[in-house]
Length: 263
Image 1 (cartoon, rainbow, N blue to C red):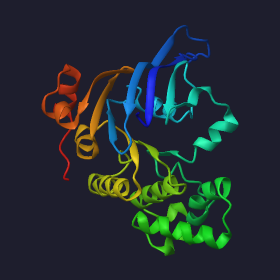
Image 2: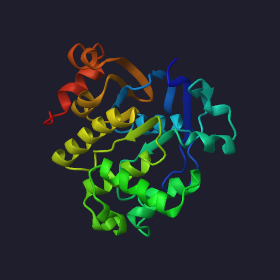
Image 3: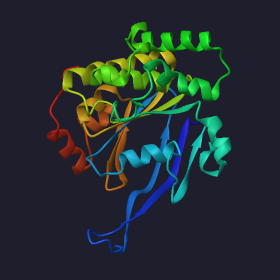
Image 4: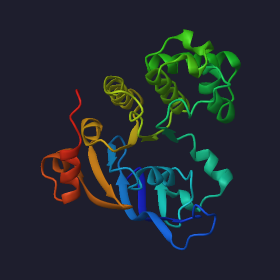
């Protein structure tokens, strides 16, 4: 059984308003009848250009937004059918790493409090035990204990992303959506973060949905790759199949359009 099973998932957004404030007719299918399985221990790379629906799909999988129709199952349990209080219990196992490491961290909180927040909500630990856990998590992502008392704005972009990763790991999740986690970073720092994610997967036994517009980044980290265009999955296969023998013209275009990165 797959860890994550996505079946016929659809998300429709209304077009909203025009610049004059009048309602616009019509709708946008951001995710259009997507079905995918994600196997425990793998990294499924989800690649496509901006606006293809990748991030929307990632948020639907975690039920951060509600689907129009379709289902998402985790370990055989349909997440779309559980109540909000029940869904809270699944949050321990389902986490997200956001694209913007600054915008996703509360600037009012010190790093220790940022990482400890999910522990306070979900676990009954003493303050000392929480502090030990936070220290362990910081070391796991390549930061030392001195980071605990500092604020997010005191760190570089790459360091802030490491803090965000530590927070995502706090509850020892089984599955993480990594939503464009290196797109806001320069190439060398982004490569370090990608390598860190690979190491953490081995150390913590993680399963990833890794979202990116960069085919070389996805190729480096992923076990399998799904290519998304205009809300649909147009091709899916192993890393070698997608990058060496792409069947879809759109996949071929993505491969030609993105420069290589250093591994």
